[in-house]
Length: 143
Image (cartoon, rainbow, N blue to C red; front, side, top):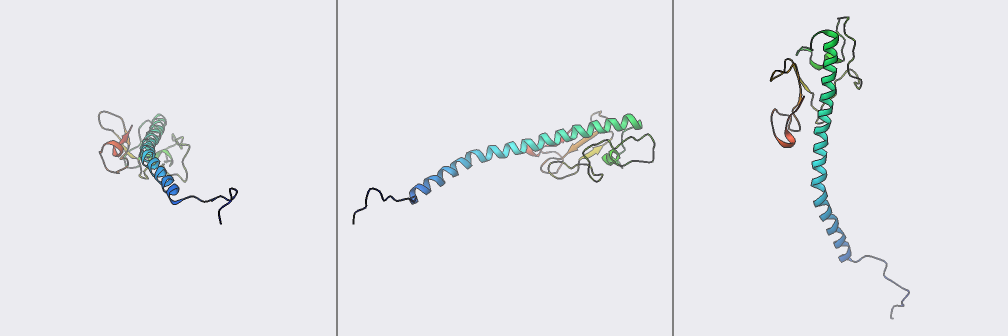
């Protein structure tokens, strides 16, 4: 019995589905790497912004206490009050439970006083690889 013009096939053919999957695969291959590089760049930018905020808090600590935090206490000196009455902290507003924020890769920031190359202090993140040095996306982020 011949089909009437009103009755149509309402499904997709296998060929049409394969073409759609091919197009989606091509778009993923093009857009995916660019998206991932943007994510890595944003993590580095976030780390730099947090290091800048920590640096300002260290400077405020120095103004009140007359010295930079020592290496034994490190950045915890910004949120944990010592017995010295000159301390007017906490010096970081966004601290929860007295903890210093971690870098975007989940590691604690490194604090050194005095810093290298004549700086009063260094605050750094070892980056995505969590090891000193590195390049590209694994490079250290410092003040």
